[in-house]
Length: 253
Image (cartoon, rainbow, N blue to C red; front, side):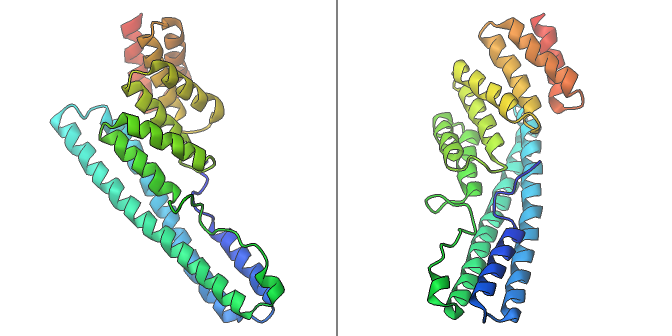
């Protein structure tokens, strides 16, 4: 379900292998050493991405109860954990980039001029020197701090710069949440609708449907509100949003 933010280890291995084959005289031991480094980095990245996803899911739930002292404390603790994971991922992204660059430099020094002229792919999806993880968290931190205008700009920029990462559906969702908090209900409805339509199998769909129920109730469209909330109950009965949707339905009947 998740597409890796960074280019996978297998792609990097393939690139290094092809470059070494073209060069013809690169040392096999160098390739094995580089492959081992990239394998370790890739595995660690996978584990940390899973931890980030888990922390963000918990933050989604805890955010709804942060009005209480205990809820706010748990929310703050999760925020600290998320920042630590972000720092680890950023370092891993830099390590992957440096390791791949080292391999490219070693291969180029042994290759012919023909091989040197080959256009080489970027090992990490980066735009203007910033990684997807860092770009997302900059916008998300603005959201957590109540800077919704900045969050809107940040998530819009993320979606434009990184349209195909595993964090893209999350960026759409938090863009919708930012609009909702700004009481820009028209745009919030458009964003939540797009999540349901464009990412039907994503874990953010039940949350987007629930938010659609809230936003459309705010605008007075109770028919669409009930429809969205009922979809949560029928299609995602075991989700965190199911109980919330049931309670909201009871309010607007």
